[in-house]
Image (cartoon, rainbow, N blue to C red):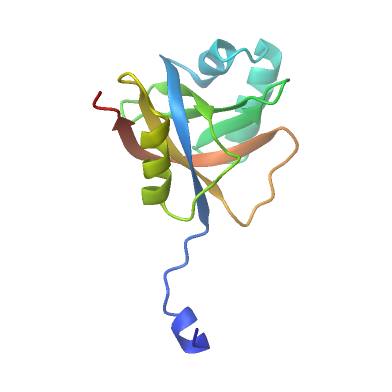
Length: 138
């Protein structure tokens, strides 16, 4: 590719991932606890997210390897989700397609995103979710 054209391409510093909704809660701590995170760890994760100045979602890996995400919903509540971070996508459309293949029996999901340039700290990452909600029509 011509180097002059590279500068004209929009820079998208995010990797997108699908997340399947488990439960909607009133606070991020309640959402993390609903996903089996101990309350003390949940408070630490939320405090770290608030301290960083990000208003995004919180992602962590539970003991045993299950990846979870807690992200704000458009109506101001918090979605507790199973996150699929093993395969991230360059565009939200690709992540939405993958999410649609994962959704079954009318479940709901979200497409979240992770900053590509920031390496994740051990155990948790601060994310910004997209406001897009996907519902399986089955």
